[in-house]
Amino acid sequence: MKVCRLVLFGALWAFLMPGCAPMNASSAIREAETQLDGAQKARADKYAPYLFFMAHSYLEKAKLTEGFSEFGAAEQYGLRAKDLASKASTEARENRLRQKILKQRLKQRDKVREAK
Image 1 (cartoon, helix red, strand yellow):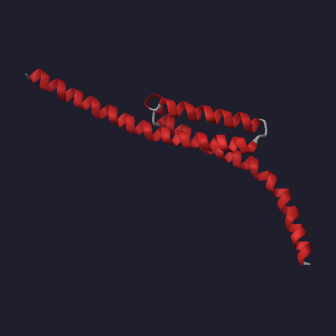
Image 2 (cartoon, one colour):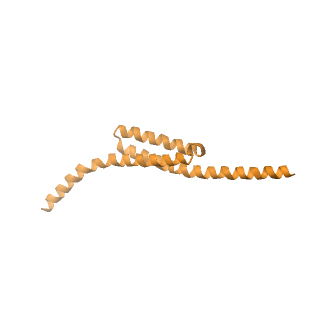
Image 3 (cartoon, helix red, strand yellow):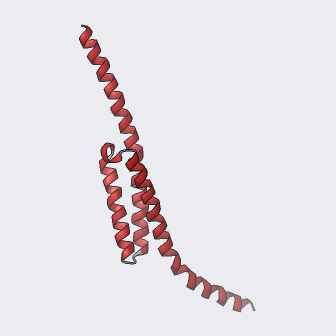
């Protein structure tokens, strides 16, 4: 009875496991697309262009490899795209804040020079 359960469990596991790879790849790609949309809203294409376009490139590569049924590679590319898009969002916010501070300081400097 115990052996029968083990054989049944093993057969079920062998049947269901190959179905996980496509779902994992699709999930990683979907998450990367969401992160990339957030990065675009943060204006990462202007304030963090390197990271933004690297994330975009990895996302395109993930989609391409998923199309060729290379799900493990597609998942890895998708996860890398998600990570880069997240970093691009953060860097874009920081760089936009730096630009704002710089503009304020330049205005203050110009006022001081005009007063002299």
